[in-house]
Image (tube, rainbow, N blue to C red; front, side, top):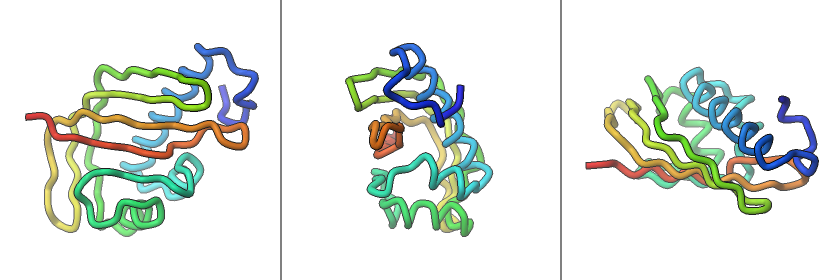
Length: 133
């Protein structure tokens, strides 16, 4: 299934599969520093809520592509998807290791991702990562 398929024609199951695929693409793009994929998946008004210095889309992508934010690995467990009309919430438990400006951030996190269907396509609009324990 391609992200290019009009979102209005997808069944709930197809929408959930598309969002799982987009989630997987986003995680891989972080590790690979794939600016084009990050820009395609993330909305202009994207917000990342975690104690990094820059929370908006431009700063976040810049940190990833410049190497200020290095994502060594993210392993997602217990991925759940719930669709509420033009909004979707993905939840997961992550094992992750990030290096932000030389500081290691490693551990287990509960993550919430919010997607919104805009102009007939899904976009990642917010991510919140909370340390567990």
